[in-house]
Amino acid sequence: MDQSKYKILLVDDEEDIVEFLSYNLEKEGFNVVTAINGQEAIHKAKKELPDLIIMDVMMPVMDGMTAVQEIRKIKALEETIIVFLTARSEDYSQIAGFEAGADDYVSKPIKPKVLMSRINALLRRSSKKEKNTTVIELNNLIIDPERFIVIKEGEKIILPNKEFKILALLAASPNKVFSREDIFAKVWGNDVIVGDRTIDVHVRKIREKIGIDNIRTIKGVGYTFSI
Image 1 (cartoon, rainbow, N blue to C red):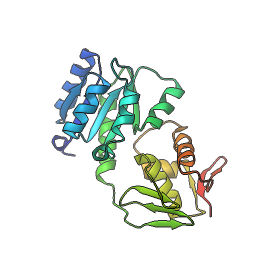
Image 2 (cartoon, helix red, strand yellow):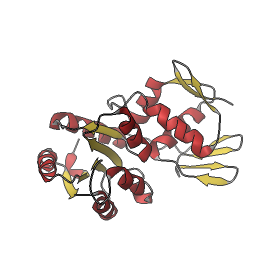
Image 3 (tube, helix red, strand yellow):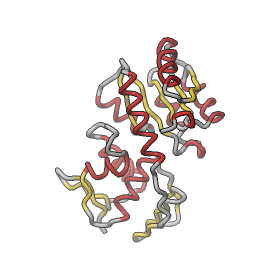
């Protein structure tokens, strides 16, 4: 992988962490832009359009969760990969991170080799994405993978990247049962590690936003889109 073609926005209010990670990222060939709080991160993200954002959670002025929620509203940054950095390892914190729109989660203290491996896996997965242009129509629901939109009874609904991909995956094969492992592999990639409750959180948000009960939980297995 040619890292020099990738731009990373690194956001953390601790100067030593910014210097440490910037050094390691640049040593690997990445182009690095930095910010010290969420507010500055939004400004830099709009200006630089990074391929990947590494975002601390607890920061002054504006925290990382709020910043990511705002960044996900920006059309040009919908596909940008976002990784949270945090010293908080509680399960609820990880769930909140994924709900905010993050793609992955790395706890402090940070091991450079682990972080680089995670970043490369995310970028590799992103570069291999194949655009599926087949529009899915089920009852009163239209799912358009090319435009990344969902239309229900004439109303357009915009979902975050991972939520849309899960919905499109399930709806493309009605009544087929997908295991959690299948969904992880197809949406996140086999070499990306995420928490056990991640899919549950994303499915719950899909149900809430679209107002459908077609996505059924198959206890001990995974999910299916029933029609």
